[in-house]
Length: 430
Image (cartoon, rainbow, N blue to C red; front, side, top):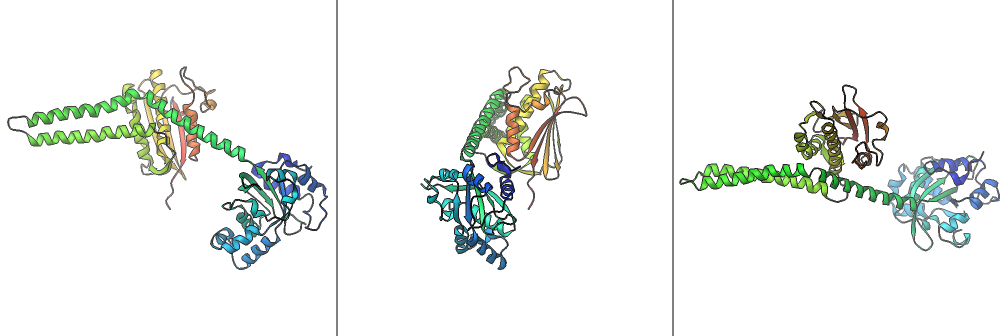
């Protein structure tokens, strides 16, 4: 049974298009255009279809291939003359009514006889790439493209081409365009909303840690006050003790730096800024994250243990987002241990290499998670706490996936407790 063109899967569109076209040979330039499959494409389809004569483009591709060109895209970037031939080397033979409407025309006459490059943005690489695909012997091709309507406005499409069909005339290509501008706009809006939600979550987390932050700042400030007073006392002696006063001033300088670092960490976590990926070592990430919640461990008498295989393992990540992820997991574990009064409460943070990824584990020795809850812990608005919003772990999942990684929640098998396992791609040495 023939595939219905209105139900094509965009992810495999070119191969399905080739399958449909293969039901009957693509007609030659001079052929009668009344074949059944052609009527499906050109008269009743809801997808924009264009038939083009690409013989000029093919001829130049073959000439370049004979000259030893194997990477056409790279060659065209260095040869504007050949690039112009490739881009303009296809002429529109026919276009369906959907294409006429999508590209802003009144009738087919607005398009037939035009070169296809008129309808592609000058910085779009689709035409060079499709020619390279033909040179490499491929039968079909697809790529995201930026197209122009007749009035000059632009829109985004999934551009798909069938270049070779057994028994078909060589040089007649069938191209399809799926307008996915709305989908891309929606995706961009979703990304903005996700970033906003991630930022709000960070602010909320900092609010929960306000007592810890105040305590962290209180320690260096208290030491600064004590040291300044000591320095004054040493200098006010009948015989001033300058050396002791210098040592006291040294303590002031050290604690001032410590207080500044605490403020910088909090400011970084609270800031709203575009994500920036940088190379950072796993050991540094973990220890900076732990510094945010150290006082929470002390308040709940929780022991912390590390199992970092190689502190110098590096990942390319948004430092603030990964810190947010780890802080969230550490705070969750702290709250569970505190709420359930676990005996000898302990949290362990482990890191090890597994092939091309680093595996981070945050484990506790609390009550563990209900088996029915495990599949839902990363769902938005799911929480086992009465006062929980159910967003923290959902945001953790989105952060990890945005970095090309994964996160899972498990009950420990070595003892009672829960474990969260994060995998992030390593920065491989070049």
